[in-house]
Amino acid sequence: MRFYGFFRMGWGILEEAFEPLKGRFGGRAVVITGREFSRGYGERIARVLNCRVYTAFEVPESVSADLVIGVGGGSVIDRAKLLAYERSIPFVSVPTLPSSDGIASPVSVVNGKSLFLTLPYGLVVDLDVISSSPEWGILAGVGDAISNLSASYDWDRFKNLSEEPYVSEASAMAKTGAMGVMGIHPKRDTEVLVWGLILSGMAMEMAGSSRPASGPEHKISHALDAIGYGEKHGVQVGIFTPLFLKLNGWERWEEVRNYLLKVGFPPSVKLSERDARTVFSTASSTRPHRYTVLEHMGWEKVLKEALELGFVEIF
Image (cartoon, rainbow, N blue to C red; front, side):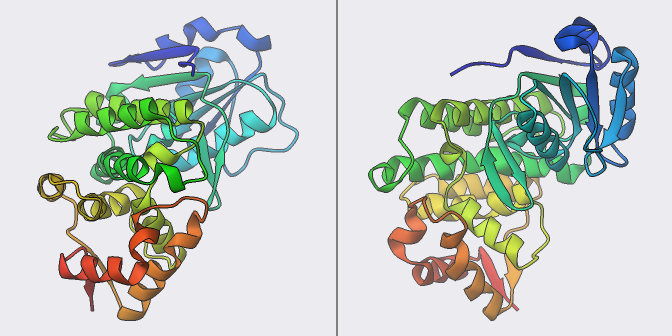
């Protein structure tokens, strides 16, 4: 396992953090941003490095660079990360939203497909930028970080039935990050949230897979995405984390649920009966190599529990 080769975190550090990278890696950097919110931050970095800025969905095939810097939320970071990986050049992640652990992990999700790549070379976190994130971005990050509890406890329980090698240290690291986020004030304690997401990314690097941070709660979220449910990924996995903690016998599951409700999570997803059956019956196929309590119990029993406990409401 390795840590980031270049790491900076602090308040108001966006420009100064990149001074040491001037002229490094051949001197040709490219900054990849979103179309709106993150564009201004990317342009500030580009002025320091004297380089071009492109949006994540409009990078020309002919672009030439020795360093890729991704500035934005999860989807922007994922696309920039993949671009750097495909060209075998270093990647620096600069999150503007703490909405998922993808900002700090080796995993890239593009067009619904999860790819295990390599840990970013660098991570730069300006806490002024992160703390100005919209509420939904911060809540999504809380949900994604805390979902590591469900994922890692499930992994512990079914480690002998999974195709992915079990690494106890990675499971412990994932739990540590999640428990650190439990109880924080999301808007005020953004640095703690970011460290939780970093530990999640490092747990994946240690495991060689996303398993310590992705369990049955992620399968349900991916199935919700497939029917176009429309909620943010981190919120979806957060909603279902207490359910799967309970189904795996974790006694403090209600404490997790109460905290999520307190900070603004919806108590449930609202689905038609048909969509509920579709989501739960197809969730296993989103990550078929990953054995979880969902497969152990069977989707019909899990859906029944979700309905009885109010995690799913039928309209």
